[in-house]
Image (spheres, one colour):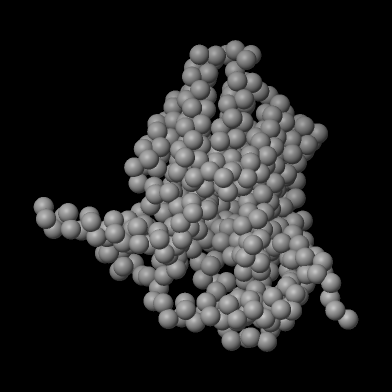
Length: 471
């Protein structure tokens, strides 16, 4: 009996849904701390200071920077499916470790281990989806992981609000209930990946051609499966003949320049201060004048706008240049940060202040998630030629997570030391620096092949080298 085309589509949808639960876990685990911190900080709980608040939050990000670097290499060696299965187990065990943590020190250790899973998921899941997707659907299917990340953050904000408003006063350990919810999607991911096949590209790279063809026939029609296997084999042969870049190649001017730009793109996304809002949104709204319960409910607006703006960002990517989209996003976020600083100073003590701050955080996230974040991940995938991709992506994503760690750690300390207004003015200054960087160094990548971009950087590097020699 001939298999119907819709069966292939159904199999691909199942694979996409199950694997993107890794993105959902990424989002939930980074967002849940937002509502849990006010309850953890109480004297009868973990009794957090501004420094330990920063450590509890940022230890996950510190772990994620290492998970992102080593996750790709481990999945290359052991397989995408097998490593995502192991990630699901790590998500589950570390979630329980955080939930039952008896002290700050234990919490920080388990948050770091949880971060390893988050960082690895940020690399492994998009790679797995890219290799399972047909070429014409790759962009749409891979960006579904981004949607699941912001959806996970929205779920975290919603559950935080429900648990905080219904149990916050009566239940001392309400934050533990907030954290343990993340164990459920981890279980779903583990059982789901048991029935998901391995990446055909990884199987082919290990010489398992028959297995690769069998998987392709599950998610493509027979003719397409045969032709795609041939393409995969040709690409693997091409890559095996291409020498991958190493750190010694940074002595070459054009290589150094492109890696510098990749690092810059990653850092620019973080120094806008986006994760000060995603991690500490509840505290920001509390400090502006909302009660804890009102802040938890108000923070849901931040999650909703993040999801909606991501849809808009995906739509814009095919219609607008990367540079103008990124610069517009940075202007929008910098303006919103400046207005938060102004309102916090001018309206201090006013009943209007919390609503003005909430309006500006929502505006900030509309520009961030609708322009900056989609462009960041797309450009990091576009700017590196084949032989530079491993080095460039590894270094850039590590620096992105490291910048994320610094923001997550320093924000509560700054908030305690200099207040809401000055803290956001500082982020606004960093936003201006980000605009200047993008305007000066970032090339337009839309509509250009990887080879054209490589030639652009090579030519630019040779010009710089000749100029230095002549001087």
